Image (cartoon, rainbow, N blue to C red):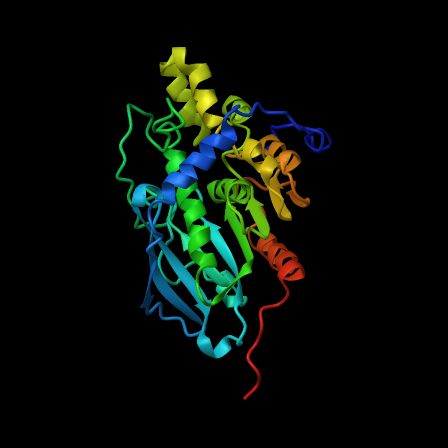
Length: 332
């Protein structure tokens, strides 16, 4: 796949000042205060994943509206853990992926971290399975998730998703095995966009690792991305010609390139210059807007798969530099 976006030297200068809603802070303060009316009510049920070096728990907690959200908690097996609380990682999932099966997504636990792998409500029937529904309906929308309730920020699907993601961070930070002052957020594509949003909306994030993040710079993404998921918005506006301003006004409340101006934790981004799903300029828009210390890894010849195992290795080194190596048990 050829490079179809700006040359790298121009990407390193691409820093649009995307308009932020005047009431952005008030909107999210009110949303999260409303969510706080429901106790997290987290439960942790041990499951047998078949793995001997990782312990897995089936997690349920109350997300937006008190709706149940599911996740897996993976911990290094007790025999491999030290006495000290563990550094931790919250992992959000890519578009239409779920938390998967119990033995999936165990990299961070294998490296000595507590790891919470979170469902995205209503998703998880694409590339991996999920177990969390979305009981809230919407007006007429394109197939997919990007246009559900897009007529209004209060009704938009991602208001619920962003809130669930913040609540997931609260759940992991409250777990007794976790060092609440060493918690990172990460994800690929949609998961990367959610990690950026949570870094802006929630206290307690100490490191952020967004890979080829989605949900960034909607005005440009919808104009240059050649296909879905951004194409869902394009088709919606093709039909609803009179709603262009209204839709982009809603999206601005959820655009990670707008929200992450408020972020302050160190961040390690990745971008792929042949990415046909999340155009690299939209990733650089978020990177340049990001409010904390940051670095970015560039993969010149990759599509939306980004760095995959190479980036995971870079993340592990980077996170250990910030959190230290997880404690090991004393030799017996």
